[in-house]
Amino acid sequence: MKVILFTDSLGAGGAQRQLVGLAVLLKKRMYDVKVCTYHDIDFYKKTLAENNIDNVVIHDENYLNRILLISRYFKIEKPDWVISYQESPSVIACLTKLLGGKYKLLVSERSTTQHLGIKEKIRFLLYRLSDVIVPNSYSQESFLTNNYKYMQRKIKTITNFVDLNNQFSYSFKKRSDKPIILIAASIWQLKNTLGFIEAVRILSARNHSFVVEWYGLVEGHDEYVDKCLELIDKYKLHEYIKLLPKTNKIDEKYKSCDYFCLPSFYEGTPNVICEAISTGRPVICSDVCDNSIYVKEDYNGYLFDPKNPVDMADNMEKALLLAEVRYDEMCENSRKIAEELLPEDIFVKKYIELIEKY
Image (cartoon, rainbow, N blue to C red; front, side, top):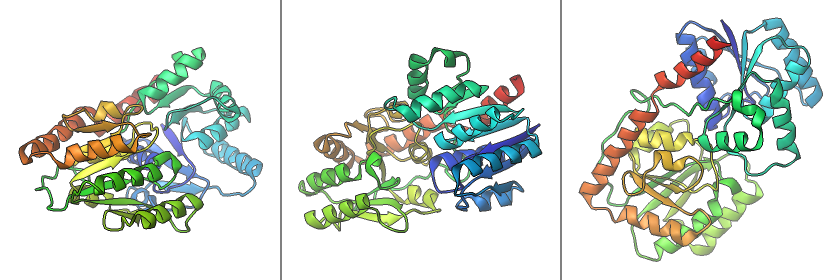
């Protein structure tokens, strides 16, 4: 069976990480797999090359030309399935079906919709052209089925997977004298960086020893990043929080940190939380969407209100004040949850069941 996995780029995002992982897992199970993108960003290209998977880049600045070129490529390749990840690629994939594509189409939703604007309504109207809709979170499944009854027969939620035995294996460590709180997320409004800096200011005033390493900078600062840097300067928090470039060695960062944090306003199923618990780290994160499936209060972490910096600071403080025995228990509990929910075999089996069924 021939499968084309389609997304915008091979950038360093969570959706791309899961798509590349799916490509590799299908390839190992003898599927004919290619990855198609329309921006030439090569963060994960090496992974595809190592597994002999072609990445075809169809780039055109003109949106309409891009759709036509991608449609032509799909028609030439004649795949049995196109699997699209993310909103814009899924819209394009639906339009290629409208232009005469004869393949089956699976569109995957990678976040949780917060409101129904015109763009969302158009996207979900086009999803009528798809054969299967795969949210990666139960919160998005609930949103879609509550708002679009036609989707009920098409939806199958498949949450993320993690490489539990290699890249994100369990890693025991003694807590550092100056604990490291790791965040791996783009620095922008959705991820709530400004609100988190306010929480760090509150926590630092309580005389705790800690440092936050936030890996999320990209080349060229936008206005939001500048505001974050200015706020760190204003509060003199340089010894407490460091905004660092995105890294392709995030697995090493999980294993060297003491806690993981994610203060975003909403999510789908966050790769980074899944990876953090796989390596055995307690997690302090927003109580939004599906996060509470992976982070159980006072079992392997703490949940907070992302709109309340005091609540964020209070829950980080709880984590910092854990007795050593309780800290070690939380590390072990994180790994237990990961082993139950995140094996790659469960993930790829669900995809194979769908593409073999239709």
